[in-house]
Image (cartoon, rainbow, N blue to C red; front, top):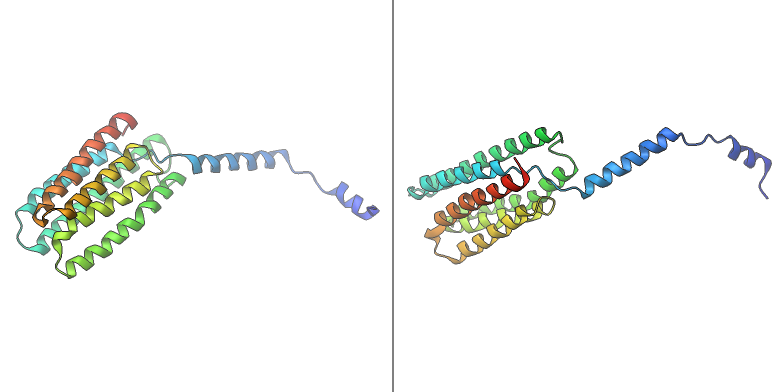
Length: 205
């Protein structure tokens, strides 16, 4: 049997304010939408710009005989490409009024990071061993893997592009090493331009 004191405690406990309950519901709805939303700020124009940078780098790198100069050319092109892509995605997110690193954006970036980090480690290891000919296939394979994993939170053309990069990487590793620049031009140049055009036309920006 419930004591009078406990009955009094139940009676005197203040009810949850309607406003607080509504705020909790809105917070739950917003968090659920963020978890289920796709990252739509991948920029098609940014992808096409990355492709142009890669084509220029391929022309420059093809005429180099010093391995370190060749490596520096491609690493410089990668830095420029990532900077351009980030700026274009930030521009697209501002136009849509959504923070770039919202829930889907954070998941997209985090999912891309492990394959890219693995690529950085393997680049250093292969360069130290003098195995520069294996770098194009390794880069394409791991970059493609990063696009597939990150693209699982984005629009459909993104993971499809990642698979295409992985196939190009596998083909490069199975081909003569002096074909590396051609594969890099075809993938980092051609695939970025083609899929960038598709994303720009179908998803804007």
